[in-house]
Length: 252
Image (cartoon, rainbow, N blue to C red; front, top):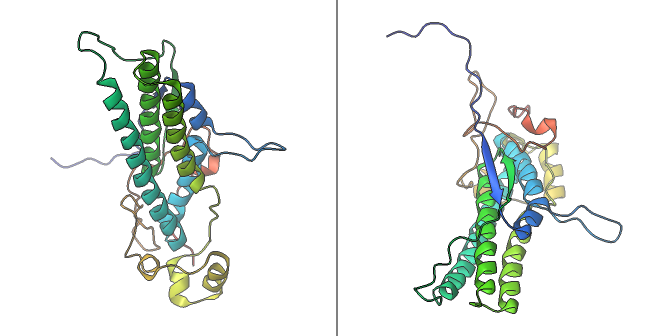
C-alpha cells in the first residue's frame, strides 16, 4: 500500500530513570564543584555533558575528538574490568554465608531516582558502570553488616571502585574542541597547522578515519544528502541548551 503524504517525523525520545541506593554512588553522580582550596571533581553528569561535546565534535569530522573517544573507550574497558574484579571478590565473600540464611537484596527504602537522557553511546557505558558500583556498594555494605567482611575490607573495596570511576570521569575534563576537520589536514592549511601546535600530532589511522571508537558517531560531511547520527540526539536534562543543538557538517 502506498504511503500518503505526511508531515516529517519528529525525533524519538525515551523516558529513562536511574535508581541509586547508596550515598557512595550519589556522590559519584554529583562530583564536586571547585572551591577556594579544593579542585573540582567530575561526576557522571559532568562526564556525560563533556562526552556529548566530544561526540558532537567527532560527528563534525574532528579527528582529535575521535582520538578522545578512543581514549574514553579504552578507559571504560579497564574500569569495567576493575569493577568486575571487585565484584568477584565480593561474591566469594557472600558465598561464605550458610545456606540456611537468605540474605536477600540490600535496597534503600527511599532510593534516589534521576532522569537520564544521554546523547553519546559511550555515556551510557559510564552510566552502566555507576549502576554497577551502586550494586557493589549495596552488597558490600550487606556483607560487612553480616560479618562476612570486616570494615577495612569494606572501605578498601568502596574506595577502589570509587577511584576507578573518578579516574574515568576526570579523563575528559581537559578536553577542548580543536575546531578543525579532516579536510583541513588534507589541505594542510593554517587551521591544521595551528591544531598541530595546540594539540599535537595524531596517529595516521586516526587522522585518516580508519581507526575510530566502536560507538563513534556517523561523520556528517557537506553534501546534497544529510547524514544522520547513530541514534536520537538527547542530552542530560540539566545540560546547556547548546548541547541539544544538531551538529552541522564541517563548514571548511
